[in-house]
Amino acid sequence: MRTVELLLDEAADQAVREAWRRLADAGLPSQARHRSPTNSPHLTLATCPELTTQIRWNLAEVAAALPLPVRCTGVVRFERPTSVLAWALDLDRALTDLHRRVWQAVASDSPPQTLNPLHEPGRWSPHITLGRTRRAGAFADRRVPDLLPTPPLSVQLTTLRSYDTETGALEVLEPRS
Image 1 (cartoon, rainbow, N blue to C red):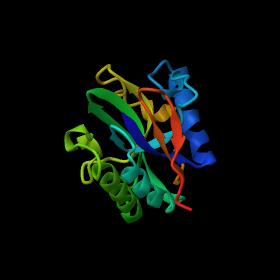
Image 2: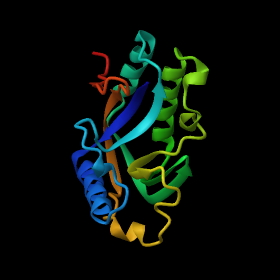
Image 3: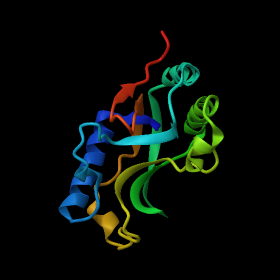
């Protein structure tokens, strides 16, 4: 499986890593516990079985639209088969359009049943994961958000990349030249 993700500007990246550290220091699930060199704060836009030539061509056009400023709206929790604590991002018109273009790119050359329905336009909730666990309700304590630094008001989404979940390889998806 291949992900399509956006990386954050340096200041936002550091703020997320500080949140990861604070969660880990408090003994809570944290992305800081994932020691892989490929583990970076990011926004997942979609997943697909492979990046075909057609998908790559369309994603190169999306990459040309970067950087994209977005607003962080605060802490959010999800309970879907895993418990997730994250910083939510405002789904404004520009981010909605960029996400729609990515979805159309991966859907253009992927079997429909292989696409994650949670990434589908209208269902997708843009967020930057701070911690995740299979333990239900792990972030339900009201004090958990108080452990976190203040999220950045503005985040620049700077780089389009893909992660190969089978090989662990990362690939930056460049704009067409």
